Image (cartoon, rainbow, N blue to C red; front, side, top):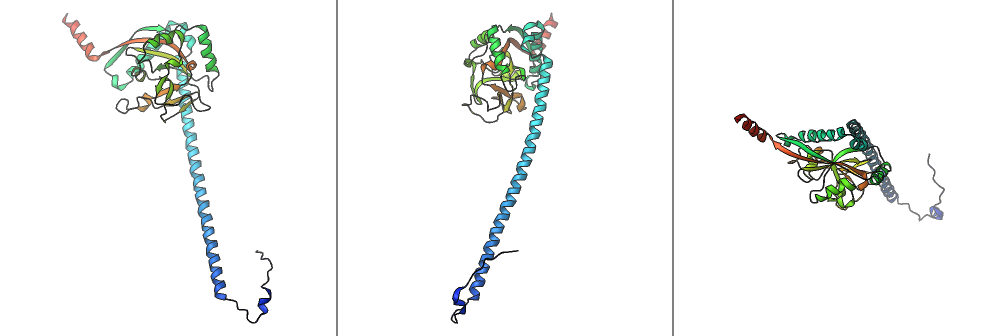
Length: 292
C-alpha cells in the first residue's frame, strides 16, 4: 500500500480558463520513472559489487587460514626436530657429545647442498663459547619475555665477513649491536638454518653456531634497510635471503634467513673451523698412495 498526502489544486480548477497540460504531466511522469529506474539500477549494481567483495574476502581469509595452518604445522615439525637434536644451550655446554653433533649437523647440511656434491667438508676444530653467567642470564631473560619463548633453534650466523675479529669477541661476550648487519631486509642479526648459505656470508673456513630464539616469526618479502624491529606481536622476521638468486640457489628456501633485532635473542654456542676438499683432490691422493 502507498500513502499520498492530501493536496489541493486551489481555486484554479473551477476557473473556466484553467487548462491541464496532460502531455507535460505524462512527460514528467516518464522522467520520474526513468530516474527511479536509474536509481534502482545503481543500487542493484552497488549491492552486487558488495556481494562480490564479500565473497572475495571470505575466499582470501579461508586461503590465509590454510596457509597459517600449514606454516604452523611446518614450524611445529621444525621445533620438534630441533628438540630432538638437542637445541637446549645447556646440553651444548655440558657435554662433548653436543659439539660432535654440531660438527655432524654442519657437514650434513653442507652435503645436502647440490652445488657442493663434489666437495667434502671436515671440521678441524671447535672453539667453544665461553660466556659469563651474567650474560647467559640476560639472554635467557630476554628469550623468556618474548611472544613465543619456546621456539628456539640452532642456526648459523650469516655475518662477520668484513670483521672477522668480532667472531672471537662474540663467543666470549655474546652478540651486540656492533654485530648487526645493514642488510636489505633491515638492521639486525641474520641467521640461516642452512650451513651453505651462512658460509657464503661468513669468513672462509669459519662459521659461528648459535642458539637463536626466533619466537613468533613473521614472513616478510619486502626489502627495507631502515627496518629495525619486527611488526607488533612478532619476535623476528623470516625473509627470502640476501642470496635469493636462482643461479645460486635453485631452491629459494635454501637461501632463507631469519633476522632478529635484539642481540639477546641469540646465544653463541661455538665457532667451527673447517676445510674443504674436492673429489679430484681425493683421486690424486689415492693415485699418489698407489704409486708408492
